[in-house]
Image (cartoon, rainbow, N blue to C red; front, side):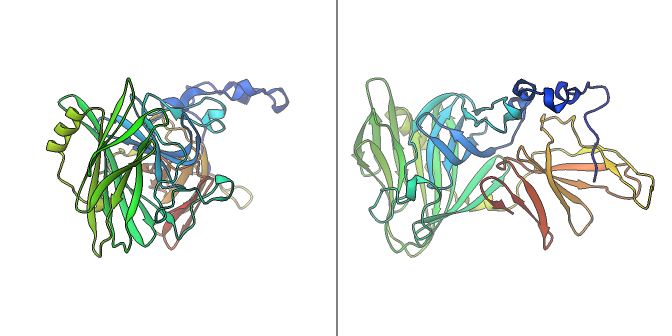
Length: 384
């Protein structure tokens, strides 16, 4: 499957007019990646204020994307959370060689700390602090997208966890939340909620705690059966009691006690994040292009299908792999994290429909259809 370049009315890139020997690094600086609507999340290496998150997922939370949280798929915890923006995308080589960093004001920065304890052990067991936690400790299983919502799926010990972060406002008071469905667990579980080396952690009661200094406060409340809080050093932890059945828990995070009480009054109900594991509303409109049927030449013909360069999300289309489904439609991956489904590939190519099927993947470098399912290999994992 071939592809035409940018629309004819657009001039070719400066780099394309230079011989390779004459090209310099400045020829490959392009800021369009910063203008792309990437969707509800982006998997990437992320440069948070204290540490680099090698395998992070920046998730937009709130109906108006009021905040962003960075989840670490290796340590299964939140490295950081912030308000006021998403990510600063870099222009070097179209953003592919320089990692993004948070755009906005930090709420908390946990750093590369283990997200869940193994029993009572919070020490990082990994050699050189690289790679995932041991499987018997915890294991990332993937995520689900449902409209704007994201549900994270992982295991901690013998317990299966579904978790969905979110944000909102009550009377002008912003807040963050974590909603969890915890499977049967033979032992108690503990998760890091928030920490700050410059703040003091105080346990107010069994379900309320705070981090404070002279200029800032982080108030936390735990809701749900068997859910409590504890503090140690500069950290606040969520604790879940053992149980033989699934349970729901919620963590609310706010910047004042008064605000936390208001948020609790309005958002004490706990709905299972399992509802986000089913198909949800689409968020991308269909796009149309046309193709050119090639003329046979020396026993071969090359058909050319035009890519939807002119798209409303300003998505970049550096294709990195494609394959075909049983219905003769195609899946096309791009290195900036998208997978497109392409239909209308027939003997005329007069109406090609492009659907932005998936977004936010970590630089897909290949795509393969197996048993009529698409698999993408990225810089972090193989994604189905």
